[in-house]
Amino acid sequence: MNNNYDISKKRIMHIDTSGKLYEKKDTGIAYKIVNGSEHKGLVLSVKLKRELKRNLHIWNNYPNVYAICIYYLIEDSFKDFDVLVICEDEHINRVKKALDYLFRNSSEYKEKNILGIGDLREMTGNKKLKSYADRTAKVYRKKALKPLYRQQRGIKLNIVQINYAKILEKWKELKNAIK
Image (cartoon, rainbow, N blue to C red):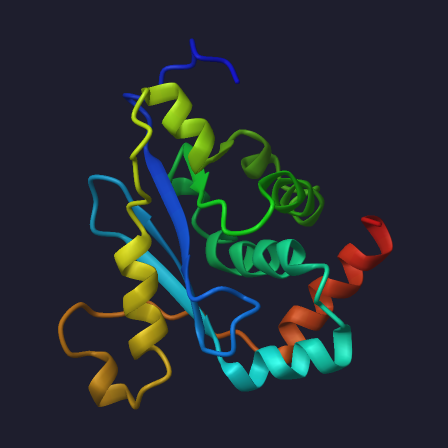
């Protein structure tokens, strides 16, 4: 990692999960912009994860599922950040490789710096640095699948709708490209 890279003047987006992809509970994945109020998230329900496991056999490919979710979260948000910091809930190099493929035709993506939270800890010297999106992901996991009137209590959620068909579309792309 290049320790001379200065991120102090960059707009930083953190992405984190709440609930592991392999656990039998809902998984919230969200981003939050550091020093800003922008956030967006999605939820993979237990039912959706069960369907993915049964039909796509995702057991060894959780990094690809994580990358697909990140893809849908940030695909229209490139103007909001310069540096993307991904919490290392899944193998970060596999997640980066999948994202690179999914965004292979995006010049905007290629201009961004993608880091794992471990890289950021190394750069800052703060070994206890936590993701800024940790609480945000937890809120999405707990509230995004609730009825609308319960979702909008407190912080207004910006929910990205995710379903089996959307994941399957990107899954097929990745399956053919990344072995």
